[in-house]
Image (tube, rainbow, N blue to C red; front, side, top):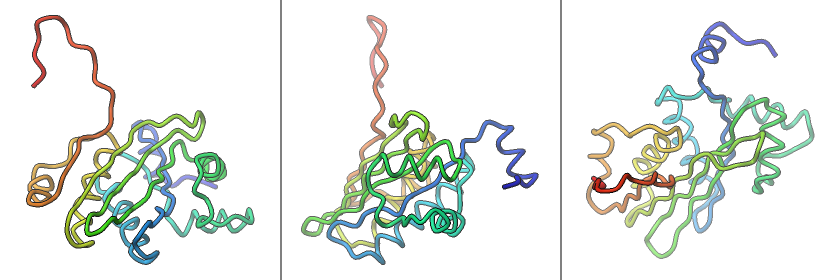
Length: 178
């Protein structure tokens, strides 16, 4: 495969290549899970922090290898797919529903080492369409950026938003956490 000029320039800027596996739907149907995964893809592109492999390109490569994305839920399988795609990182996760509460669990991990780079877990109480804004926040957190203020303001209301799961750095003696 050859790189176009734009992709080559993005790589030169240090942008990482990423592919997103279709998220698992637990308690929601596959169409809803696919729609929510699409929103995550769109928002990760909007962050302008990563180079995303398009879904159709990914499916084409997987078909050539005799693999299907839908059966790939383990980290080992995802890393194998990432290696075939030639990407540095993969994103996988699940959308869940318990009662009228929805969950989003996502992680970005290195294809080379399998180590989790960043993860994000969110909970939303209400209708499934309320997850759309939550997923946009997840995308920003996965790429390691602060979500824009207007996006955070749209989350507001009845959503419970937890920060990205990143280890806290030790603080020097006498300083206070803000």
